[in-house]
Image 1 (tube, rainbow, N blue to C red):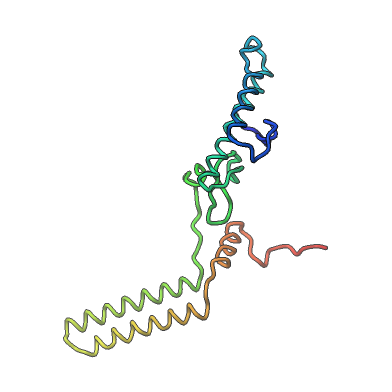
Image 2 (image 1 turned 180 degrees about the vertical axis):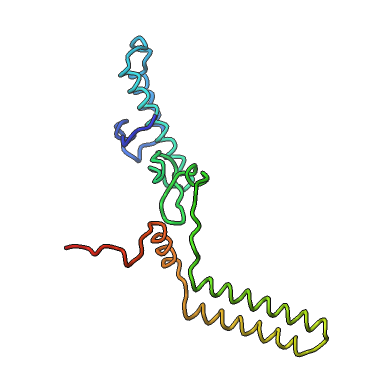
Length: 193
């Protein structure tokens, strides 16, 4: 049974820093008070209250176990269940089930400068390899020098691109969120005051 916004500690009449013994003692009191068998077993309201008390006790125990494992505990952003949460790359906190559940994910394009740097370094690597193979097959030193020059030039260009146009994680996360939402900076409505 889901608690649907009911604070389990408020239901038990305890503070959030109550000891585990106090929580167990209060659970036993409420479970005995609302147990359906105490009134003949066919009182629907009594059964519902008992199920709520049991769900609250489970939620408190899971919250305590999650706190011991240094996890946050709360409502999942994806499914809405009260569980231990794990942050996704986009910053939202979801339960483990939603995190590992296979879903249809549209692959996003990489940042343009990063693609240019990777493509350029791959081209330089292939050109250097071709020059080294030619140097080994022909025995000419010129091809070996050309391979070294291409490799060094590739490293210098990739390094300069990285220094001049760095891609910070915050900018990249913002760009990914904009692509996922389907809006760009130009399409955002202006704030009205």
